[in-house]
Image 1: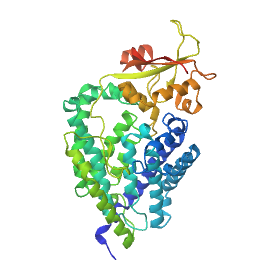
Image 2: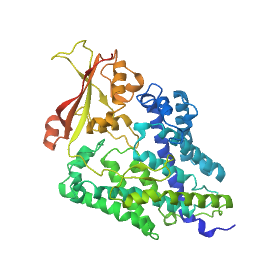
Image 3: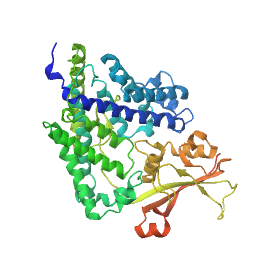
Length: 470
């Protein structure tokens, strides 16, 4: 059966780049899971998976771990996902028959879904659902055995549209500083995890910050509509989105959010503008039927995210089904004007007195020592560091995990200490831990020259009084 309308060989190169890049994002995600899970959600973690599985049925959080959980089995799943991601990034999907390639992508998606659905607070970020939704569509994108299916390419653009347009709407409906173009006066300083260039971005002239904000509105509210126009306009729109995301990559650490948005944009580029397409066979009947069925399912499930886009009470980063098939996205509907950070200190002295010496724990990514320039970690995701930023916004964000975190520091737990940059107690653990809230701001050019400090901090209040093990 010839379905000439069903595929377009013009996108063979776009599919190749998209699949390789998506496998790279998957690789980073599985590495984050494998290297951090024991302290966060392991059997002795701050939010243990076994306890969660006893409370939540499979229909609410589908996961292979409902069948069996142990730290060893979780590690096996995470490292298997990493190995499979690496193989697909190297082109394994094109070296096997179409059905096998689809199975490989499906296994990758199912493994990461299983992790996200037991990850609790640590996996409550929008880019987790974004990776899963993108990964689900990638299952049906095919390989070299057939030209790329037009319907799946359309669904990828629909996803990219929701990511960008949703983020643009949430800004216009949210903080007034987006409407008067002043949000970037503060954003680079108060974002969750600044990067090595964030200090310099913050000190750009204010008129340029206003131009940045205006350009953001154009990129997120106008350009996404052009994704559905004929080529080469759609490719130009995708290129603008890529450039905007690269600007965001330079200005901060947003895990793989920017990178997977770039990956989605690449799928909208007409590869024939770069290279001639090779001859590719038409799709087998079973594959065509499956793609049509999946498209119908996604279109049906899109009704709630589409309704959310039009709602005055627009929610961001919400999943409407336990498989994360079609979700809603958005970021920075409000921008903080002041940055607060929680600084954790310990002491090995048996009693606390005015002269007690407190030593500070250093985190890998979040600001701590004022003379330490922020580092680039994205697309790698430092989950503990991000949650510490949320906890500084409100103690409600610390509920459930912060007390176990302090307890493990008092125990000198090795897995927890691996999440930190510096442990001031390399021998015996401290006797007491305290947490203090500070206001942080970027230094001025003059302060940087005189002190060598990138940050200036001022004590605000006590976050956790000196605490010891019972």
